Amino acid sequence: MAGFSSKTLVLVSLLGLLVMLLCGTSKAQSNQDCCLSYTKARLPRWALKGYTEQLPGELCDIHAIIFHTNRGLKACVNPKDAWVKKHLLFLSHKLKKMSM
Image (cartoon, rainbow, N blue to C red; front, side):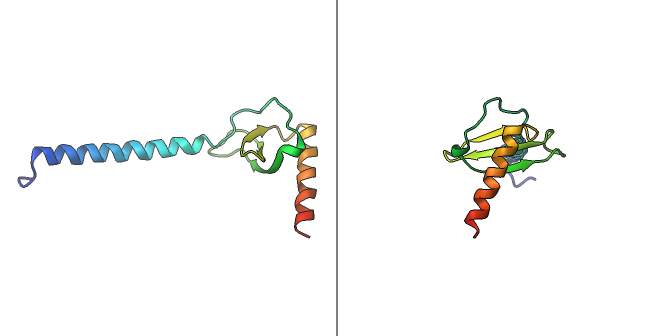
């Protein structure tokens, strides 16, 4: 270590700290992709372009449907709600027609 100046050691230490902080931040951001609660608003069918299903597991606590809107927004909804089931059926038929 005699060949390194104190400035170099400080710089390397700061870079190591920065890498640790960035790694910690990226893990926290992955949790932001989880639905933590359900949206109360009922979305119109015409505004939807698709959905994904969130299953409870290691990262996410609740079972949810994430509706994707034509404007690029995402809404977490309760898959047990009747209107959500109807919207899922509508999107399934829409997808089936597109694949024919």
